[in-house]
Image 1 (spheres, rainbow, N blue to C red):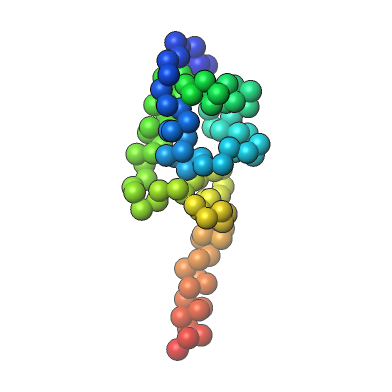
Image 2: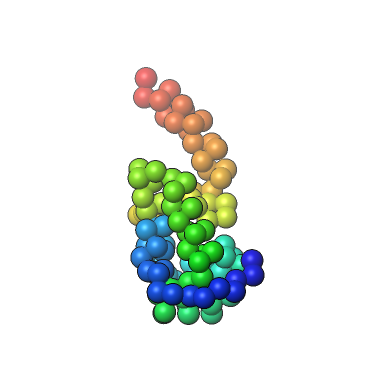
Length: 109
């Protein structure tokens, strides 16, 4: 993604928060850099200045519209879902969830 546009203050930090990026540690900065195809240094600058290019803001806005309010605080990163309370679930863990629930139900009866 080549990003060359005029940047104006656009509440970038608030948008990150609304999209589930509540902890901006080194791992999250790397994930954001991968997502936007920029360096972590660029992400830090956008956060510091509280602004990012228009395409980045639009991408974040589109991402937040993909999930309804029941999913507030959840994040999808590469092959994992991160929950608001800090748990991570891989794709395989989610795929096997229905089997695990069925086994639990069978043991209860």
